[in-house]
Amino acid sequence: MKITHTEIYRFSIPMEPFVIATGTMHFAQNVLIRIHTDAGIHGVGECSAFPMIVGETQETCLAMAKDFAQILIGKDPLDIPERMNDLLGYAAHNSTIKSAFDMALFDIAAKHADLPLYRFLGGQKRTIETDMTIGIDSPENMALSALRYQKQGCRILKIKLGKKVTEDIDRVAKIRQAVGQDMIIRLDANQGWNFDDALYALGALAQFNIEFCEQPMRTWFDDRLPELKANSPIKIMADESCYHHHDARKLINSQSCEYLNIKFSKSGGILEAQKIHEIALQTGTKCMIGSMLESRIALTANLHFALSSPNVVFFDLDTCLLGHLADPVIGGLTYNGYFLDVPETSGIGADATPAFLKNCEQWII
Image 1 (cartoon, rainbow, N blue to C red):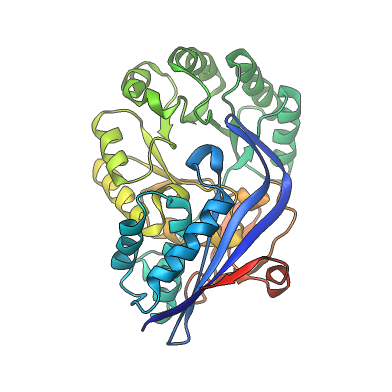
Image 2 (image 1 turned 180 degrees about the vertical axis):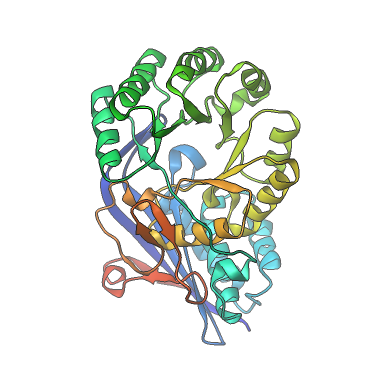
């Protein structure tokens, strides 16, 4: 089997503004690709650029996608490690757009094996419950959002923080007061605090029964993560500090965190995510599967990966519920309240709707 060509789409999804510590996203800056083969099988991949975290924009993803597509012409799509090495040999970083190509290659491989992706990866079905994320707003508005999600059946909240510490503490206090003690609350500071602020905030927030806090500090303070972890009453999850399995190894060996957050946009896709998971599994470090602002296409691939990764025990797969104003997906994962399931069709089991793609800018390489 050989790759013949790749379709590339500017897959912009309108959405309500979403605010985190490092910036605001006004639409989902996504890119969709379809890798075609001479066997009549095509693979679908999607990525979501989040410039203020990973550093890639939709424009850089599109530019690199054209180069990557050219590199892969005539090559075997089933040798995924070699194909991803081809891309690595061309560009050292650009993990977000690489994840779309990785995803499409795994889609082809699973379709070729006539298996749903999670089974191709050696997984099995289990109960998956996502959290719901609340973006930064006034404490009162965030508490109202928390109540709304609770009334809709949500049992796990992820609260975005990382602004002024006293205001962040007030945000969590108001949310906990509104929802009571039964809801699980997670925090995500998105690198918003320095060491002193993080130490103070985590100490003050512990009274609100917090499951963990993601990425309290900027990555340039990673050398102080072991000290923060040793003094924090709240468990710490590394997110922006963990892109690949070498990061995972260093974080674990230095006792910098209790948990790791795996995202395809950081790892460059499933292949590297598997390596992160394996290192975490060997040391008993539990993981979360997270996401940026993907549609249900990429979220479905995320869920397939989670089903094949027993050490992934936290699930942040709510991105298409965070104000997306369109759902341009055929097939894909389904939500039963906040419980998720994947289709049994071969491959990822999701693709974009022709009607939506008709209005997307397209390139064929």
